[in-house]
Image 1 (cartoon, one colour):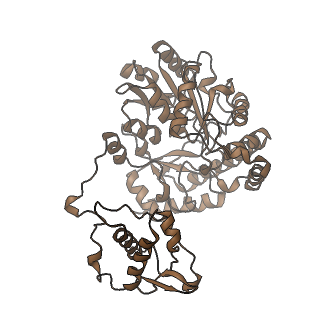
Image 2 (image 1 turned 90 degrees about the horizontal axis):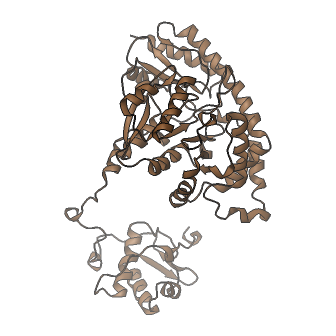
Image 3 (image 1 turned 120 degrees about the vertical axis):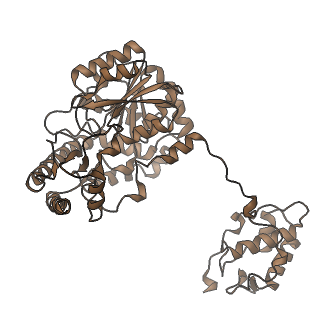
Length: 500
């Protein structure tokens, strides 16, 4: 068995540095012995020749030979003709010969001090994470919100486009890219925004990023000074709220109703705010649209106050009852004040991690430099594939197909709720998006969430999105689940919540 072991990369193994006054032979012996005892050099591992190790660490070959001989005499190494020098299959008692190791690998507990962290880091650590990562239950447990159906994505087509960019003739495309993004993708986004969102803009004003979260983070750094105030929707998107909580901005919670953010209330609370964060096309999480009158009022406030509007184009593409509402950025006189951000990760698949931001002219240079400093650039290979996906018409066809699919599932969800949840949960008409806020008719939403989760149903309590109390509700998703799954899970919800 030992003869089949491959040689370890001992020359890449960190061995530390000699202590002052410590001989090189003693240092090398102790470092190798510690690596063996900690299993960084497992039993059977083949060590480099004394010549190779001496050359790599700039040591005399005799020094390495002496260290090897000492380890061999104590039973840590075996040598033989044609066998090389290997770590022994059976190690001696680790308490033997302990006197040879006089350096402490770690300081005693009484000498260890915890390194301090900043208040910013403390605030961030105190937040309950929005993006659950590994904590999310595996699979697609209904009715977890904010998810699309990745199983409906045309993965074979994507693989074909991806493979096309991995030809040897295109290897130079794998070098570093423009921090603002690939020109081909930015040009494709220009065409998409013009047709789908009513936004007329040049490619030079678009920057490609990893997420809308990143766009908001960089925007806060650039346009909001410490202590300046920012309007935030209440209820609103928790990811945006946590970024603001962790930064040095003063967040002002502006209430939301059926017509979106109450702009007049925002002006009453903080007319001098530096920026407003809004989801005008599909409010997160309530699902309404910012009314025309409030859109104009918000733009007028920003223009007169010299403030910015961060427009998160949340779920705007999935609208079932009429054509998508044009972006706020599409209206006149928005060029200097509106920052529009959108993501492809929800439209295609979450691990794509590609988004875009449309910037006012005065922010383009500084924003691009900040991207270069903090992230260098978004994944250029994925950008190239996405550019082809859009330019060849696949993106538009995919959106139309998914819009039809999600509309059917929204109807199935509403029908199942009507049949099974009478007196338990009230589901409003679903006009757009991937999820809906459902109102509990009785009981506590945290208790309902816990009871449902215990039996395989995932929901999000509405209070997760709120500062001021709201009537109890659950944010429930329907998009990833077919009609049979929706019907079965709806019956389970009724059974679980009907228990006393």
